[in-house]
Length: 265
Image (cartoon, one colour):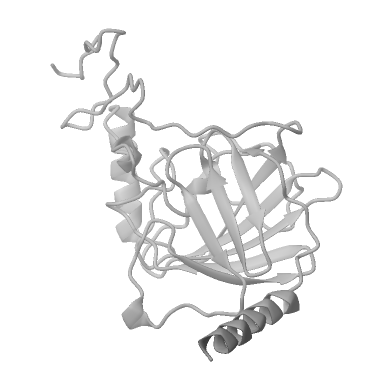
């Protein structure tokens, strides 16, 4: 009897899997970011535009007074070379959506029920559920580095929402001093542009604590040549830039000795 029940269960699962069609996309291979950092880009902006310079107003999020003060304090620490980046603690994920703006390679694994974003840099895996589930109820959610993402496909376009993210104090969006609160919601649309062949991520960041309005940003990716390999590595390997207890990024020689000194020492 147990065998019959097991076979029935297996057939049921197989039927469910067959009922889900693969999205009509081919995002296979290795990719790399062709735009870096976060800056305001409306969804109707020309795809492939170069990023604005560091002092461009589009790089300044529409912050509330509280978070504008945090941002300005970050700017001061950046100028002093003391801006803390949690990723300097090896093994810490960069979090969402900063994971879209890291160096090295990416892979996008598409399945009917789920899409994964895998990065060569560090322990970063983003899971996007497209099997019809919703976010868990509030009493079952807790904030994490990549949060909880659910979405759906509209033809060759993936749309998803991410909630339950770590906020300021645990993660940063960029080393330019951009941070958000743990109430951040990110709504993302992904498609491959047929003209440029770029994979385009259009995101809208909404944060009732940090932002005065939704903040639209865009990140694009282009493919590496066919056959490009992805290689894992750990940031602790041959790390020549540890951070000391005061937040100063040190430089070590080949023998592990510090060859620079923090300001004021």
